[in-house]
Length: 234
Image (cartoon, rainbow, N blue to C red; front, side, top):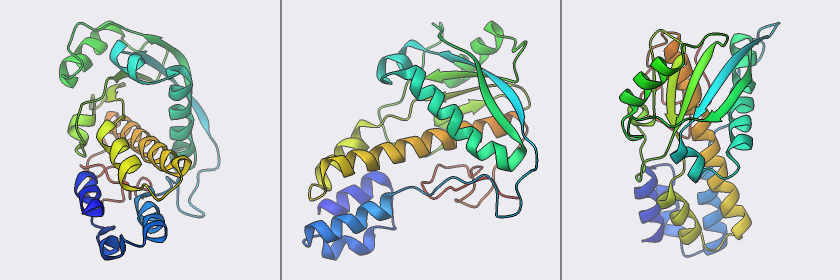
């Protein structure tokens, strides 16, 4: 029952085969944790990396709701940009650099991404930078659809994305994988959250370049988020 509830919450099928062995607590839960661990995001297939990298600048506008729920948000934003650059460098020859990051109080409600994006576009023309990014508060549900996780102007240089905090997922991992050390459980949740944040960022950035959706769940451009996503397709 415990593993079934975790699988249902996270929308997974990969872990279903572990359900009969759930009583073998530690060994079974380590297997489940391994299946829940997200794929490593890659920049390019072996031998396909570009030979030179150019710097492109990003201006970050952090909405109060994002700043309130993301502890030490300047460091978290810096990590996000570095994680994105680790993919963009080999794939497109781009390294991102933060031009500025500051709290911005939008009038639009944070749950309305379209209006937040419209207001962001009016407030910041993007002069002097290559992208303008608005970071918005999370929504209180597990949400796999990119349509509700972020929104990019196509084509353009503006996009917005949500915080990837998910209290229900965090609580489920901490509660249902109770045979694992607490440090392991926290590491798993952080890995999943970091993978999701980087994937959404790269997905919306690509939309500003007029990249369209793909069917492969492993692609960053799939219409729904998957922890199996590992990079852009060729």
